[in-house]
Length: 308
Image (cartoon, rainbow, N blue to C red; front, side, top):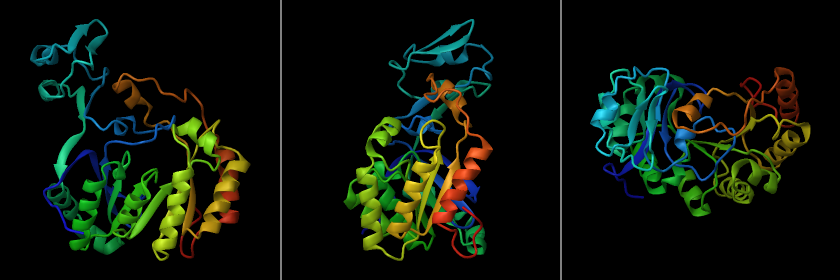
């Protein structure tokens, strides 16, 4: 496909020196926008396709600078801090730039393929030594399909190793076009029961499972790494993990890895004025280890890797 180095997309973060999102040392490009609404999502700032304003009350000096510069009068100062009328905010970023304490953060910046890859290539020496490269994540990168495909295509021209983290709830054509440009693919399967999946994420899982099968059939040599966030009260039971592991084994994917639930992103819900949907639930280490062992018994780690 043609490359579009001037194509732009909405990105909310670029994280360097990651070792958990594909082989080797990697740079992760986080896309905004996701078709799922997982109740345990650790990146709530990734869900909307629009820029968003985050407010950290703990940093706020209550100086009123942001209120004075806001042209839409979307901000007001109260004894509790700054209140944001998000229906009036135009995301012109004047308030975040003016805040002396950096209590206001804009989630989402429009960047070009060329701009992003210039950042990525700064760490090419680490990729060469470790077998790493660039990973597209989110949100859902394929929710901005043409930009994601342009970024992958240009990265291939520059011989950058390319991985994608996806929920796979996208059209099959988009999934296959992306897979053709990849060296490594990471997909989440939350559970095998479609209605239960809908209750936890807002969408059924039929398209996700179908896309995994389609990619496996079209690109049999592409490594597919399946992961499951083990969420208390949702899929932290033997039956769910066993069913996913059996699907992974039967579909011929390269690796299966349960991921322990954490609440590290909950403060970002507060920054966005949202409630965390899952409440105070916790996952015990003992419960997770049992489920990890079930997964490992059905899908042993590939030779040379530690247990998933």
